[in-house]
Length: 50
Image (tube, rainbow, N blue to C red; front, side, top):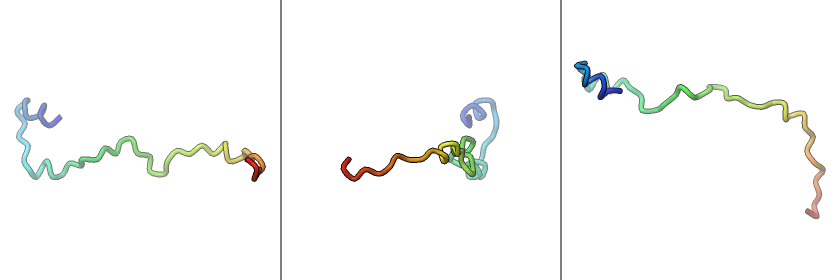
């Protein structure tokens, strides 16, 4: 993206680049997405011989 802007004639300084984050955060959900319908499922009884 930055190379494209430079090719279009934009001037980008080191201070501009310093403000950018190398980490992609658009896909992160702060509190997560959790399936809660499985919480109602009862687990199988414990069998020590298995």
